[in-house]
Amino acid sequence: MSFQDGARAAEQAMRRVFPPTPLLRNDLLSDRYGADIWLKREDLSPVRSYKLRGAFNAMRKVMRDDAVFVCASAGNHAQGVAFMCKHFGVRGVVFMPVTTPQQKILKTQMFGGAQVEIQLTGDYFDETLASAQKFCAETGGHFLSPFDDEDVIEGQASVAVEIEAQLGRLPDRIILPVGGGGLSAGTRSHFGTNVQYTFVEPQGAMSLAEALKAGAPVDVSPINNFVDGAAVAKIGQRTFARLVGADLGDVLNIPEDRICTTIVEMLNVEGLVLEPAGALAVDALKDVSEQIAGQTVVCVTSGGNFDFERLPEVKERAQRYSGVKKYFILRMPQRPGALKDFLSILGPEDDIARFEYLKKSARNFGSVLIGIETLKPENFDRFRAALDAGGFTYTDITNDEMLAQFVI
Image (cartoon, rainbow, N blue to C red; front, top):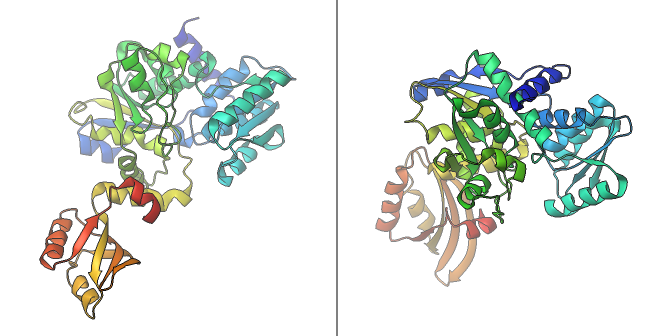
């Protein structure tokens, strides 16, 4: 059986469990980029990500009544495995780091019900993974990889099968987020060279790009975990074998803060709730805008498991990236009227978002942490000029990541 036939068979088998996720044309993005842009809404699957596809396909192929399925995950893979354990009525053991947010633990338990046992172990994922693999060795459990498994790759390729059927033709280009590579390997293996590809990684975890440069998977640790659904330190061996030959120029890396601007826009304008990895493909349109004019483009919104407790951080990152929010350490004279003089510098579109006295640095001066929000980035040119004219000493710490960890 060819890979394409296997992917089609997997997609048909899934219909007993859940319907195809929608493929929806997006007018906002189509008008903005002068293209026919469609979103493959994997964020609308039963577990709000595509991960249950690979879990389903891998589990159905080794199914037996006494099977025990084991995975290590703190996110979408855990929820996909849990959902399928409940569907098949088999036992599942999900290993999660001790630091996993309670919301993710509760969702995994909700999807799995009585069929799933959750074990919290290790502060870091490597420790959690080692515990899961040790458990499998001792009990004979079947380990379910989140991406580096041929059956998982075949299951993720069902996304491509649905796109072709729903669109009624092949798209000119498909834009895919990349973490461990299961979705991109499956899609590329199904479509072959019949479409153009844009693979998108977060800037803090460029495992595919570095693997293509080296000719083999390489560990890119330490990684930035903000885009947790795609933050993988080393792309899979099997997934990379299916991505060998991809053009390095088709692999983009997106700054984590820029991804936040797309999350906020999609939420505020389109009402779409996307996790950071789920927004990668949409955000990448900014970088391929000149290439896609007149094309039919499909962006895979891979997940929507967004914890709204993260929204203030996402908004903060988006504002800082867009240049409409900045932080300064201001050396202010300790005299009557000094604060009034400073406030007179603010323009009609400026707002104080934070004002905190930090430390008295001299008898006649004090240091203040101040955060300013404005409507247009260019307003800060006028603001700095006014500070200079007023004789204020200041330091812009907006992009100082080390300092920001402590004071922002």
